[in-house]
Amino acid sequence: MELLLVRHALPIRRELVDGPADPELSADGRAQAELLASYLSSEHLDAIYASPLRRAYETAESVAKHHDLDVQACDGVAEFDRFSPDYIPTEELKAANDPRYHAIINGEWSTDDESADEFRLRVVHTIEELIEKHPGQRIVVVCHGGVINGYLCHVLGLSHPKGFFYPNYTSINRVAAARGGVRSVVTINETSHLRGTGLPMGLFQGT
Image 1 (spheres, rainbow, N blue to C red):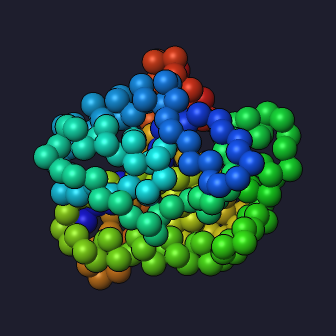
Image 2 (tube, rainbow, N blue to C red):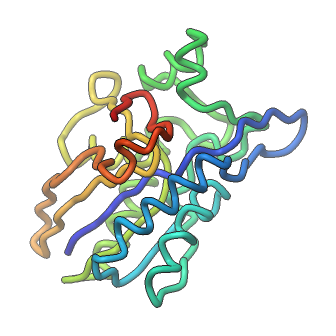
């Protein structure tokens, strides 16, 4: 089967005092999501899953409009910061040399809900369950940079901090999953649908 792990489009920045931030897509993010949806419209998809966080679910809804499919919420691919009262795009953290950016890329972050190791185990377990559920099919899972990073590092046998890489917004990261258990990374950071649009792509820009 073929697994497409897709990072959500660009959300707005949101900083709250109480409660999870859970921001919606920005105007640029909605445009990114539409381009992603158009790009995937020619591919047969058997199922579309999404993190319940708004930035991922809204991105998945754009894809679903081009297919006769409903978006299925999947709690196991929610991001590690799902309950944080703040959401600041990674690019802004990096530009400000914020300590939180360095904690992310060094795998040193933690939350009150789960450790980095617990997060990674949760992600791998969830995605493997989805693979087992769809033998011989092609599915899309719209999720987050940390989720994609965690699963692909697992497939490649890498660990933090050396195993970190950055998925761009609406990037497609394809994995071929054989019934015998072999997992092969086919593409990473597939973003041809954004090139030449002038829309932000993430830390790794392209034209």
